[in-house]
Amino acid sequence: MYDLGALIEMKKPHACVVKETGKKANKWEIIRMGADIKIECTNCHHIVMMSRRDFEKRLRTC
Image (cartoon, rainbow, N blue to C red; front, side):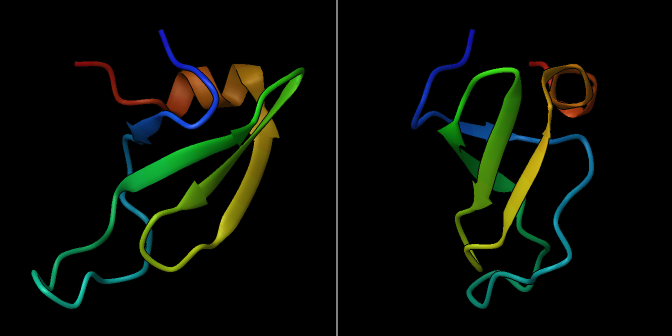
């Protein structure tokens, strides 16, 4: 489903704005997996760590 280094999208966009489009950024890279998952915004490099349960709840499914 998802793997280390994968680019994912969350249900709610991040607060930072992409300069080229003027829209809120919503691309994240998975940088740590385990009982907790750590993701990094690809635009501003903000890092968020959350439990696997919260991550799966907030992940956008296609």
